[in-house]
Length: 554
Ligand code: GLC
Ligand code: CA
Image 1 (spheres, rainbow, N blue to C red):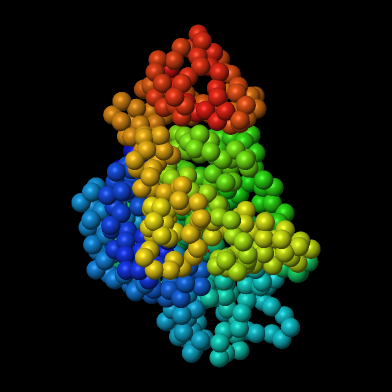
Image 2 (tube, rainbow, N blue to C red):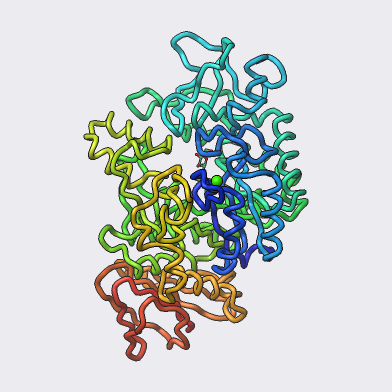
C-alpha cells in the first residue's frame, strides 16, 4: 500500500445548518464555522467535511442541490467559502465538500429544462419514461418511502427518484451528465478544496433495462437494493471520475459505499482505487430490516465487536477504511452502541477508543467529541427529517401505536444528530442568539464544549488525548499503519485488539458494567491511555473496571 498524505490525519464532519450561527437567524453558517476553526485545530482535527451548503430548497437538508457552483445564502457567500478554505489552510487543515451527484434538485435548471422539453438535451439528463395509466415503469420503493416514479410536471412522462421526489436521479449513462459532474469537481478543486465526501454513489449505476423485482412489502414495491444488486459496471463511471478529477489533484475522496463485495475492495480503495477511502458502515447497518426501523434489531457489544473486526478483515492492508461512530444520517453513537442505562463519560470514552484505534481514518461527527446523546423528542411534530417521518408512518401502518412508533423513531431518527451543536450552557446552547431551526437537546446545560474545555477529565479532553496519541512521533506509525489482530475473542462483552508495526499496542475495552479480567501473554511496558484514574494489575493479570478502556504498549 502506497503511503498517502491523508493517512495520518483525523477528520471531522460538520453539519453546517447545526454547527454555529453567526447572524442570529437560527441557521448555522460558514462564518460560524470559520469562528470555530481554532476549536477544531485545538482538538487535533486536520480534515473537515462539510455536509452540503450549496443552494438548495432543503427538501433533504441540502442533499438536493439546485446550483453546484454556489453557496446557499442561508449558509453564506462564495467569499465566505473561499475564506474558510484559506483560513483552514493557514492552520494546516483541509476542507472537503459533499459531492451529491446521484441526483440534483427538481429546482435545478437541468430539471426545469427537462420539463420544458423532455425529448431535448436535458430530458436525457434524467431517467424519463412515458406515463402509462395505472402502471409505473418499475415497482421500486424510494429510500424515503413510496414509489420512485413521479409525474414530470407539464409532460406525459414520469421521472425516477430513488430518494425524495424533489431529488431526481441523474442519468450517468449520458456522457454529457458525466462531463458536467467532472467539470464541477475540478472547478471546486481549483479553488483549493482538499477533496470530497461522495454521497449515495452506489446508486449511480442502474440495472438496465429498468424492470420490476419481487415485492418485499405489502405495498407491492421492492427496495432499490434489489436493483442495485443486479447493476453491473459502476466501476467504469467511478474510474473515469477518478482519472478526470481527484487523481490530477491528489485530492482526498471518501465514498458513501454500501454492500461492496470483498473482491471489490481493491477496486474501491486499493492503490489505484476509485476513492481514497470509504466509510465502514458494518456497525451502522447491523440489525436493519427490510420492513423498516420498527423491525430493527438492536446491536449488542459482542455484535459491535464482530462488525468492526469483519470490516477490518475484509479490508486488511489493501487500503484505508474511514471509521465512524455516527454521522448526520444516524442517531448518536453513544445512545446506540452503549446499552441503555450504561451511557456515562466512562462508556463514551471506551467507545471512542475502540473505534478510533481501528486501522483506518477516524472521522468525528460534530458533538461526538462532547459525548452528545440522542434527543428526547416528545412528539412527531418536533421532527423535521423526511426519512423519520416516513418511518413513523411505516411503523403506524404496521400496527404500532403512536407512542410505540414515536419511541422507535426517537431511537433511530437522523434528527438525533442534527440538533444544534452544544457550545455552552447559555441560551440555545450558545449555537444561536435567535431561534434555532431545530430544537436544542435539553441536556446542553451539562453537555457542552465550554465546560468540557475546562475539565481535564471531560470526554472532549479524552478525545484530544486520543488524537494526540495518533499524531505522536513515537506511536504514529503503529496507530496509523499497524496491523490489527483481535484478542480474547471468546470473552463476552470485551473488545480488544492489537496493533503492530514498529511497536505493539493493545487496545482493551471492558464493554459492560461488571468488572472482568484479562491475562496478558507478555508484560506491558507502558499505559498510554486509561479512562480511569487507576489500573488494577497484578503480574500480567488486569482486572478491568466497568467500561474501562486501556491502550497499552507491550
Ligand atoms: C446520503 C446522505 C443523506 C441523504 C441521501 C440522499 O445517504 O448522507 O443525508 O439523505 O444520501 O442524498
Ligand atoms: Ca445564520
